Length: 116
Image 1 (tube, helix red, strand yellow):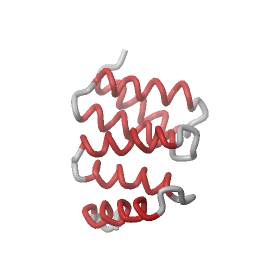
Image 2: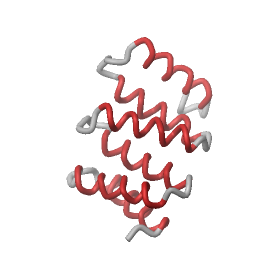
Image 3: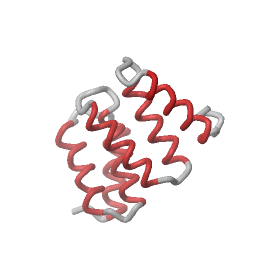
């Protein structure tokens, strides 16, 4: 659904999956993609809320770096510079071995919104 840009359907599917399977091994991925489904529709408040929830539920999981990046990006879109910059700093501090793609995008977004 995400690949077909059927974001509303994806939101419903991820929400349903999480409601039925909150502790499933795929729940972290589902939370991340739920946030992406909101972000893709420019629903930045819900995206930020979802990414924050996903990060708080598993701060060390494989999706945690991606989640912090997208949390910062969503907060940046909401003109919450202080909070966005805090997300990017947390990403850098907690995940020094994140992929170059994630680090580069975080640096790019940090610079775009004027993090110091």
